[in-house]
Each structure stands twice: as C-alpha cells, then as structure tokens.
Amino acid sequence: MNILISGASVAGPALAYWLRRHGFTPTVVERAEQVRDGGYAVDFRGEALDVLDRMGILDQVRALDTEMSDAALMDGDGKQYATLPAVVFAGDLEILKGDLTRILYEATRDDVEYVFGDSIASLEEDETGVHVTFERGEPRTFDLVVGADGLHSRTRALTFGPEEQFIRHLGIYTAIFSLDNYLGLTNTGQLYSVPGKAANIFSARHNTEARAALHFASDPLEYDRRDVAEHKRIVAERFADDGWQVPRLLREAADAQDFYFDANAQVEMERWSKGRVVLLGDAGYCAAPTSGRGTSQALIGAYILAGELAAAGGEHTAAYAAYEQQMRAYVSEHQQAGREGAKHFFMGTPTQEMLDMIAAGMPESVRGQAIRLKDYPVADRSTAASAG
Ligand SMILES: Cc1cc2nc3c(=O)[nH]c(=O)nc-3n(C[C@H](O)[C@H](O)[C@H](O)COP(=O)(O)OP(=O)(O)OC[C@H]3O[C@@H](n4cnc5c(N)ncnc54)[C@H](O)[C@@H]3O)c2cc1C
Image (cartoon, rainbow, N blue to C red; front, side, top):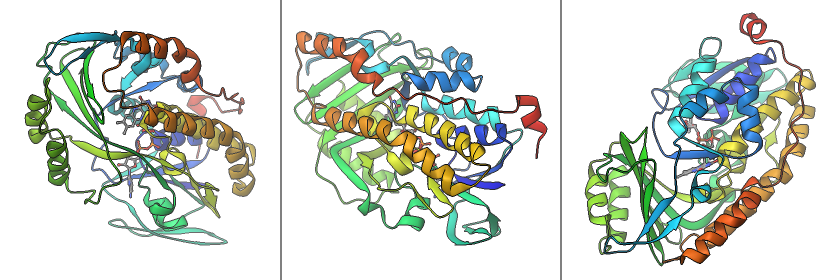
C-alpha cells in the first residue's frame, strides 16, 4: 500500500518509520526545502521514551539531551530571586526539536521517499484511492493520506474545513529564536516574568548557543502568519518597556534567522479521519506547548496508527477507528493539562515556595494518563528495509 504523509517533523517521519517496519510504502511530502534544524527544546515523558527505544534511537536521543539543571528566576534589575527546578521545564529527557527531526529523518531516509519543498494542493477520493495534486510535483494516487502537518494542517483544511472550526486559542503568544550564548549559561537558563509577560534564555547545543523565548498574554490577534517582520514588530511593541535582558533580546530577535511566532492553541476534533484521510500529531490533536506532551503524543500516535493499519491488514476504516479509540483518553488528558498550564502560565513573580510546590507535584502531573502500548508484530529491520 502506498501511503502519503504530509509533514516531516516528528509525527511524519516517526509514522514513516513504523509503516516501513510493517511493510507499507510511505512517501513523505514536506513544505520546507529541507529537514528543519535547531528550534526550541522539546521534552519526552513516560511512554514516549519506550517508543524511542522500540525504534532503536533512544541512545542517539539521549546523547543530545540538553542536560538542564535548575534555572534562575530574575527580577527586572537582573537579581536572582528564586530557582526553578529542572523537572518543571525539561521533563524526563529534553532535546532540540530539530535534532529529533534529524534523527528520525536519518533513521528513515534510506528506505522512505521524501519530497521536500512541496505541499499537497488538492485531495480527491474515490473507491480506488486518493488522487492528490501538489503545488510543484506531478499528480499521484495513494491508497491512504496522513496529515502530520501540524497545528495549521493543510490536509485537515482540505478534508475537514477551515481551521477556525477546530482551533482553541489559549490566550498566549510565543516567540522563540536562536542567539549566541552571550550570558555564558552552562546547561541552564534564566527566566523573567511580570503579569501577562514572560521571557527566558536557555543554553543550547552543549552551551555553544542559546535559545530565547518571549511570551505574552493576548486575545487572538489578526496578522499574516507568513510575515516574520510583522511578528517581530508585534513582539517588540509588547516588550518595549521591560527590564532584565529584554532590550538585548529584542535586538537579537530583530536579526534572528529562525524567528518562530505563533499562538498557543489546541486542535479539537470529533473525528480524526474521513474516508482514507487521517490526522496525526498536532494536526489532529495539538495539546499546546503548555501541556509539554505534544512530541510524546506525535510519537505514540505514529506507533499506534502504523500498528493498527498492520493489524487490520491495511483496512483503513477499522484501523483508524482502533487508533482513535486508543488515543482519545490519552489526548483528552493532555489537552486538559495544556489548558490548566495556560491558566497558570503567567505567574508574575512566583515565590520559591510556589515553585517548589509545582516541582513536587510534577512527576505525577507530567506523566499524564499512562497509555499501554500494544506489541504489534514487526519484521526485523533488515527485512523491512528490503521489503516492498
Ligand atoms: C514553543 C513550543 C514548545 C514546545 N515544547 C514542547 C515540549 O517541551 N514537549 C513536548 O512534548 N512538546 C512541545 N511542543 C510541541 C511539539 O513541538 C509538537 O507537539 C510536536 O512537534 C508535534 O509534531 P508534529 O510532527 O505533529 O507537528 P509539527 O512539529 O508542527 O510539524 C509539522 C510539519 O509539517 C510541515 N508542514 C506544514 N504545512 C505543510 C504542508 N502544507 N505541506 C507539507 N508539509 C507541511 C511543517 O513544515 C512541519 O515540518 C512545543 C511546541 C512549541 C511551539
């Protein structure tokens, strides 16, 4: 079976990996011209580590662990007034998202077709398959199509309708960018917060670089999602009067080549599939960065979707139903955690007592609802690599 996956970040390559292990033939189309590197740090908790292990890449991921230690909370004058325990922000294992994507890509590129710099333009389904046109490439027909193209999924829009119906805004905007580690941070970070605004800097890539984030509370804003200059202007206006390192961060942001800006939002859908098309990861059930579980969901969703397709012998209706049935409660709990996290995101200047209480509750609350992973029989890797 030929299966088209839209999106080569976390969910897409992870699904391609498992589909190959089960003997399917995936093709991955990614809008970016190449694998996206760097980016912000994402953490893994609980069962996602088990999936990385089953994929044989846990050691590679561990080798790139950011190994964060506790971070400092700073006031506007640059004085530390509290310490934030690492468990609160770095989970069981933390890695730059781009490093994870690269590991997943390298684990699959030899036996999966990747098409970069293109995007699905239209989808039309009949009893023979899904007829797909692309923005650049020639039209092709696939047995199934998977949307792993993130919060603003094109696959979802083409199949289910405009995103406004499915996106719940959580009242926070976030900007993230790379910069020099000019504070000389060693496996740690500094955070600054006032009511409705927060900023931070963390060291990255074994302290050779840093990542900064600027967050602010806001109702939904009207802006062009592709206009980075406009994003930078919005952020600069919001933080124009702030202290600590914020003036320097705004100067760095102005020159940043990898400036990310988006709302913290969730995707809520009654169904994740329609006909031969199914959604995976943030495209179908984004839990928002405030949940700290999006990467784990993407990895676990990929494992289950591929496993259920194999278990059903490629019969997609049964497989999609089983995938959804296994993932629903798990996703609901993380979305609930994401909403709670958003409510408490802007703490102003928290006391050490509050931070310690959050950390003490963390191991329980961050694990979320456990999901028991089934063992789907797979061909061994060498067989899978030469099959189909
Ligand atoms: C600031 C921030 C911090 C986060 N921190 C954490 C954390 O600590 N822990 C955690 O677990 N999660 C975290 N997350 C969430 C995590 O990044 C996502 O949940 C996870 O990356 C979802 O992966 P995905 O593959 O489903 O989607 P995405 O990573 O969004 O990938 C979608 C891919 O699809 C591509 N694409 C988009 N449109 C098209 C198109 N039309 N055609 C082809 N390709 C397309 C994109 O270029 C991208 O490569 C964070 C997210 C953000 C924004």
